[in-house]
Image (cartoon, rainbow, N blue to C red; front, side, top):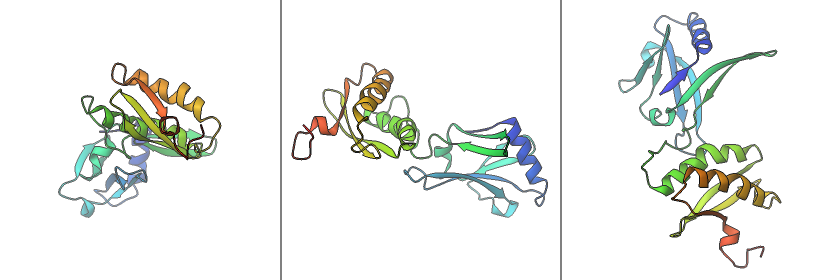
Length: 192
């Protein structure tokens, strides 16, 4: 479920040495499965362990995960990076905002998962995001751009050279195309 690098494990052991005996760490997700999901790590004294916690053993300590957070921490990783400014723990949880879906899930669910876990994090650096509006019977994913992408002159390039290419490659044989909602719906709000 969660991988913790050796450097991060050694760091936790050092931090836990100053805590009361029996203290471990807790890895959790606040608002799991939502766009506002945030992951965290905290101390977990023995009296804070819940009966339904999942306990994961590491080198010199255990990590506690509450049952609600567990599915959203699949493939999560914690690492310790060091640079000239010092050391920093990094927690990556690609499934925090949306629970991982199985390879045989319906196409719409797999597309939604790809959007939330891969595409939107890339667009977020520009203040943008996309959402799946429709999956047509012909296998075309109709997307709506929002945030910083809305009105951006690079939307067509991002759609055709980035998103469409990634999605058609991932869902080859199932998805036939990707369109922006403004290309799909001609009406008073279209730029046609």
